[in-house]
Amino acid sequence: MSASSVDSLDDVLAARLATQRERQRYRRRVTTTGKVAEKGGHLRREGRETLAFCSNDYLGLAGDPRLAQALAEGARRFGTGGGASHLVCGHSEAHEHLESRLAELAGCQRAVLFSSGYQANLGVISTLLGRGDVALHDRLNHASLLDATRLAGATLERYTHRDSDDCGARLSEVEAARRKLVVTDGVFSMDGDTAELEPLATHCERHRAWLMIDDAHGFGVLGAHGGGTREAQGLDPSRIAVTVGTLGKAFGTQGAFVAGSETLIDALIQFSRPYIYTTSLSPALAWATLTSLDIVRDEPERRVHLLSLIERFRRGAASLSEFDLHLTPSATPIQPLVIGSSWSTTGEGRQENRQGVNEAAALRLSAELESAGLWCSAIRPPSVPAGTSRLRFTLSAAHTHEDIDRLLSALFTTARRLSSARRRLA
Image (tube, rainbow, N blue to C red; front, top):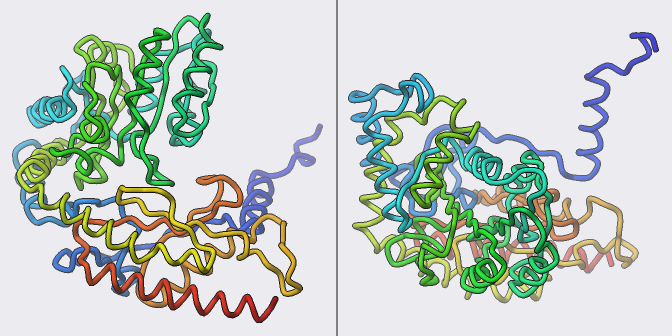
C-alpha cells in the first residue's frame, strides 16, 4: 500500500469528531476567569458571573483564603514544585506530614500520595494484579478503575450495581483465580448513591478476596469526622484492604492518596509505576492540604450545612417528576436529575429512538439554566449509560438556602415551559 493511499491522521480524527457531534456527545471546555470567593458557589464563566452547581468543591474550600495563605507559605518554605519523583529528591516534609494525617483520617496504618486519583487507581491495581487474577467491579465504577484493570492484564468482571449478593455469587464463580480483588466506588460519581460496604466485606472475607474502595467523593463529606463512606457506615477499616481518596474535591486542593497497611504502602512505593516515575505533588499544595484537613476536622458545621442543602433540594425537586425529570436516590452532594423517555417525543407524538435525542434534551435543559445564570453540566454517554442522560447538580457548603431556592425556581420554570412546548408539538 502506498503512503498516499493511507488516510491522514486529521481525516481519521475528523470523522470520529463528526460522529461525536452527530450523537450530541461533543464536549466543549468552558473558561472560568476567577472564583468569586466571597460569594461562595459563584464563578466567572467567560466573563459572566454564574451560580455554579457543577463543581466537586463540596465543602467550599477551594476558594477559602486560609488555604491560599497556606499555599503561599508552603511555596516560600518548600518551593512550588517537587523537582523530582518521591524516590529521588521530591519527597518533602510537607508530603510526609500530609501522608501521616491522611492515614489517620482513613483509620489506616499508613498512606501514600499520588498526583491524581486516576494515577492512584492505576498504581494500586497494576501493583496488586496481573494475568490470571480477577478484578470484580461494581457495574457503575469510575472509568479509571476499569482502565487500571485492563492495563494490569487482569480479567475484568462486573456485578450488578450495589448488589452485594450478586458480588458474592460472582466471587464463587471465580474461586479458582490466583488473586481476587473486589472494587467499588464509595460514592458513585454519576448517581450519587453509595456502596454498601459491610456485605461486600463479608463476601470478600468468605471468598478470600481483597476489598478496594475508591472514596473520591466521600472523604471530607461523609462521616462524623469527614472520614468518608467507611466512617459513615461504621465499618472497621481493617476490613478494607485498599482505600483511595482524592484531594481535589472536598479538600479543595489537588492530588490523591492510597491508605492501607504498612505492607501495602511499602509495596506501592516499590512497585507502582505511576508513583515511581512521576514528579511528586507540589509540596506547596501538600502544605495547603494540611490546613484543609484542619478545617474539615474543626468545622463540622460545614457538613451539617451541606446536609441541610441536600435535604432542601431533594424536597423541592421531587415534584419535577411531573415533567418526567427524576431524582436518583442520593443522600450525597451529587444530585442527578435523569431525563425521562417523554423528552424524546417527536412532533407526531411518536417516541424517537435514534441516538442523540436524550442527549440533546440534556443539553437543552443545561443551556436554558445557563441563560438564567445557573451553571449545571449535561452528563451524557459514555459517562452514563445510553438513554440516561441527566443534569448532574453538585451542591457545596458554599451555597446558601437562597441559592437552592433560586435553582429550584429556575428548574420548574424551565421544565414547565419546555414540557408545554413538547405537548403542543405532540
